[in-house]
Length: 179
Picture 1 (spheres, rainbow, N blue to C red):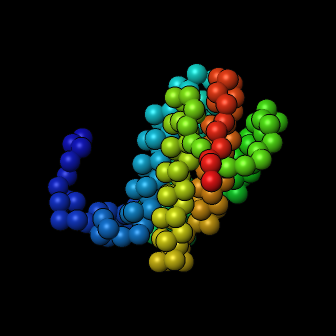
Picture 2: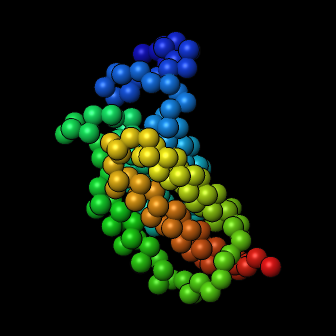
């Protein structure tokens, strides 16, 4: 199978149903940013912590599902991959478990720390952009899986928690901004 087809040379791409859309459409921008997020998450693994890596592997699969979901204009397609509220609940459960490991947050913190911690903070900021793109896409069409948008919102929080956990485990103190 060839990697290139030439079908996108004029700025159009295929969706799951084989309809053609501009590569600049909010749909493509949305799932393209989720793809970028998935790549950033992939750069974190291995983080040095098997428990974190296990969660990140699951997240990468979920992000791939969101990409497929956003690439599908047919909301009635029962065989199409979908992120559900159960995926969102998984993130919440994971965060609650890790939160027990952390001191309560009393102020904003600067992103950074260890290599893995910094990469998790970077992933969090890309996740926020992916969420903004998904919200813009949902404003463009009503056929967007709201669970996918909720997942991206919750994922940015989870990435923040994991960044804090990794930095704490590595003995790197959090820094607050000075105003």
